[in-house]
Length: 51
Figure 1: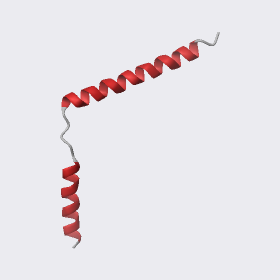
Figure 2 (figure 1 turned 90 degrees about the horizontal axis):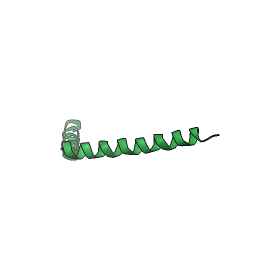
Figure 3 (figure 1 turned 45 degrees about the horizontal axis):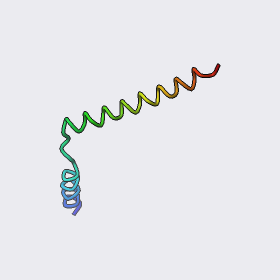
Figure 4 (figure 1 turned 120 degrees about the horizontal axis):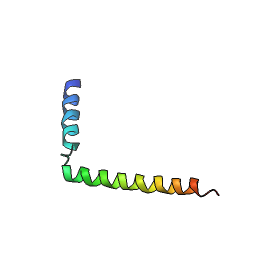
């Protein structure tokens, strides 16, 4: 009985896996880098504006 549930769980897990496309991964990476760049610039501006 345990083997049957393991097989079903494995099949469900494989169904949930989505094939990743390089274009989509690149877009999300660019978006994350852009967001990080903006955050770093804002922090730098706040730290340097203490005059």
